Image 1 (cartoon, rainbow, N blue to C red):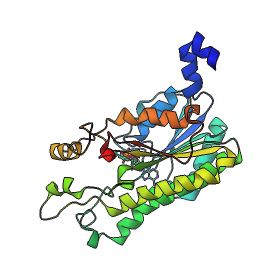
Image 2: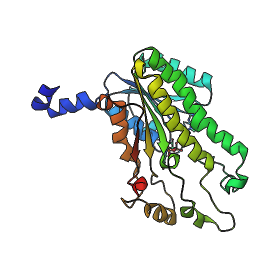
Image 3: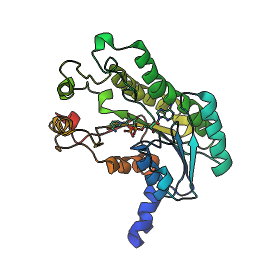
Image 4: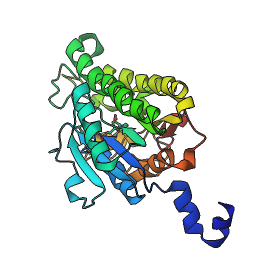
Length: 279
Ligand SMILES: NC(=O)c1ccc[n+]([C@@H]2O[C@H](COP(=O)([O-])OP(=O)(O)OC[C@H]3O[C@@H](n4cnc5c(N)ncnc54)[C@H](O)[C@@H]3O)[C@@H](O)[C@H]2O)c1
């Protein structure tokens, strides 16, 4: 490696961050951030399988990507059989699996009622269940089936997506302006599920260390997504860098954790939040 640094800096970087001959799965790939991760992994040379339960998501950029190394599959991560079928498709197309980005999640359900985003005291058990099913059970199933394959074959890298709300309580004051009569609260199940992601990450990092499967988490801050001006101002006031993240600002961390650049890293959580958690 040292020779290549001297003669050709770009080949040094390719060796460090390149993903040629690697196969990756991104869950929730039709969402705002999932599409970014797909683009990043393809650019680094990987073959990528994009899993999503809703491939018609209007946010999706998958149909705009023209690459023979992209396979798009309808997969529901809460359904073991669906994930197993997804793995079989990936293996028949690409022959192996080395990278898993567990990105799919829901926040408040898309059809959230006032009650579901209301006070903790009346937060419905059903909403708790739905969010736990996707954000935690779905990730558990993907680790079990997809990570299990990696552990039984060639090792690899698993990246579990958490949130600042998995390590810090949401400041409900930044949401309260929305309605005085029916106040909005960031749902408790989102925080608890994202905290659980960190537990799952540490558990599997040690469990699969001897199988050469590295398991790390990303703790992400809020991303610009057409929120209203008051929310953006309220949120940005809490961020030392003074703004929300652009959706492409997590791609570098994905590439780092997916590639050999992070070969000595497992059981860790990288915080990327514009400094939100620093004060
Ligand atoms: N956007 C943010 O501000 C932010 C901040 C911190 C953390 N995160 C985390 O980043 C990840 C991606 O967030 P996003 O903003 O891109 O979300 P998004 O809602 O845009 O995308 C999520 C995708 O997951 C898919 N999905 C939902 N349930 C599924 C299931 N059962 N099976 C398969 N796919 C399913 C959805 O169809 C959607 O396409 C999430 O884990 C989220 O918690 C996001």
